[in-house]
Every structure is written in C-alpha cells, then in structure tokens.
Image 1 (cartoon, helix red, strand yellow):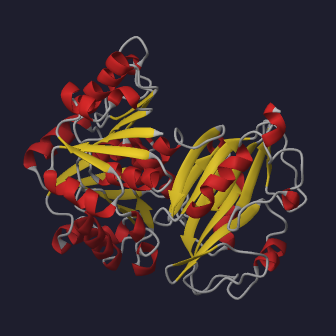
Image 2 (cartoon, rainbow, N blue to C red):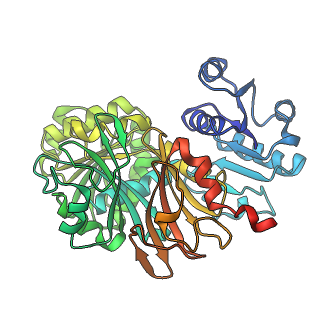
Length: 455
C-alpha cells in the first residue's frame, strides 16, 4: 500500500514506523523540518516539508496514486481539509483524520459521505478517557483493552510479591482457577517479552497480559491479589481536553471529583462547564496543595496534563502522600510496563489508542480491531473467521501458526471460549489473536483465503 501520513508527531511517527516495517510505501508530511530530519534518520520513509492541507504538497506526495491518507496533525482544520482533498480531488480509498474537538465525534454528519467523507475520525483523548474509566472500574489492572464489544478483555498488570501464583507453572494456574475463562498470553520479565507455554513459571515483578471473559475480570484480578474496592473520590491533575472529558464522565458516575489546573483562564472555563466538580487553580505536583486537598483520603489521582514528566512526578508524589491508586497519562509506549514497578497503578496513552484504531484499516483479513503491545513488539487483534481461511474448521493444534502466536479467545454467538489445542474455530467466530510483530505477515496469510479457493 502507498500511504500518506500528515503530521510527524507522536502518532504520525509511530504509525509510519509500523507501516514502513511492513513493506508499505510511506510518505510523511510536516511543516517542521527538524522533526522530519529525525524521521528520515530513523525510518525508511519519504519525507516532504509543507502543509498537508496544500493541494500542491499533496500532489508532490503523489496523492493520485495513494491508497490511504492519515491526517494526524494537532490541527483539526488541517486534518479535515487534507481528507476533503483526498476524497474530492483524487478519490483516495481510505481517509483517516484525527479530530481533537470533543464536540465532534465519529457519528457527526460532518464526516459522512455527503460531506467530508472521512472513513475514520479519531479522538485519541476521548479513547484514552474511556480507558481511564475502565481502569477505575477494575482497580487492579494497569492496562485494559476491550474486544468483542466489551465481552472479552485483555488485562495487563504487575505480579506482586504476595501473589498466589508465584513459582507456579501456567498449567497449574489454570487448574487453580477452577477452569475459569482466563488465559495468560504474554509475560514481560526484565524488559524481555516471553510468549508463555504450559511450563512457563510466574515470577515476582512479571508484567503479564491475560485474556478473559469480561464477567470474570474482577475474580481474575482478585485471584492475582489485586484490590477491587470501587472509587468514591478522585483528583484530576490537568484541565485540558482530557481532564474536562474525564471530569464529566466521573461526575455522571457519582464520584466526587476535584480538578487541578495551572491556567487561571482555563479554570474559569472548567468551572462554567462542570456542575459538581471542584476546580482548583494550582500545580498538581505541589506537595502542600495535595495535602490541603486531603490526598490521603483520595481513591484515585489521575495525571493527564500534556507534560509526561509532570504526570509521572505528580502521580508518584500523590502515591507517596497517601492516594490509594494513581494513573498517569504516558505518551511513550515503552514506558508502560516499567511504570507499575515504580508505584504507578495504571497508564493511559492517547497515542496508543489512535494507533489501534488506524491498524484496523491496515491489517488483511476481516479485522475488527488491532492493538500494538510492548513498544510495538507484539500485537493483539480481533478478527472474524472467514469460511475460506486456514484458521477455520480444524483444531488449533493442527494450524501452523508462526512461533509466538496464541489464540486467546473465541466468541461464538453469545459464548466466550478460552481455547485449548483441541478447540476449533468456525466461520463467523470472532477470534482474539496475540502475535509477535515479526509474525504478523504470516498470521495475515492464515486469516485470509486458502490458496486453492481461487483454483
């Protein structure tokens, strides 16, 4: 595929990184020459200096010969115009726009075929806020990813020193859970990614991802020694778009919320938008302010400013001063699995959410969603099994999956199946698959039609 990416920030850079490594022809456009120089030094992509909303710049990028435009600058207007040009001037098949304005979403008629004609509008902040609420609903988790319309969840968490499974093999753990619908699909130990087998042993400070039916998540986290008390009070650090959206959601859930914001004018805006939320003008990394606001009685401290360092510092300080749980907005995905070891309970990553949405349009086969994990070293995705693919109508143990690939769950109508080697995938099943980045192309072949289908 030939793909034009407009915007070389965090999202654009990482999408370009993933797609270029999978033999796609990638062009990235940005006004910032220094940013593009960094891109050129690290990625095998073409770079063009200029505005992605300029017809001349898009022509220079060979818009007419492109299969996809991904507009992910910080400007909604630039992203909208770029997609509009792609739809009206060149008929590019797939158009994706990042839209940060919280008043606009994918359901808006603005993005329909009769108007801008955008195939996917992404609001990374909105997706990250949903994830934060998910983490608060399941307090023991550090990461949660939904599949099968929420019926199945992938849950990541750190294994504590008092966990009941320490020193146990995976096959023993499955017996200990009483055959519940839970499957460990990956382990990170000392920065090394391990794809587990039945004899793999769980050790202290392992970071694990487990797939489970949503109804089993609470019991699963309790089994691994996680506290599941529901939140009553929360303090949010950062009154930007994410802070406002999160405050509104928590307010509706009846949680007592305070929000801390440095900018006086933004505080006034927040106060006019929020009914019961207490708006505080100040620095969320200030020890005295946190003490004054009784941080020790707070169930959750959530740091969502645009400053990653301040978020980490604020969360660690809040935890030290007595907050029961702390969540931090982290933009760098390679931090995600280190964070729980330093005392931060949960991570939300807007960039990660955006990448997951975009990958849905890249993967071959009938992909519902795709999420990169472990600094993009692995991926987990949901696919609908096609009647003509290699994955259907045979036991999983007889399918030649590439090394490091695990089928984590199967949804068949209303039944969630955590599979074993004898399990069979039928056409129409929703299948959750974990695989290493290096094996994605091979897995895609298994998910598409059989070679003899056309013969």
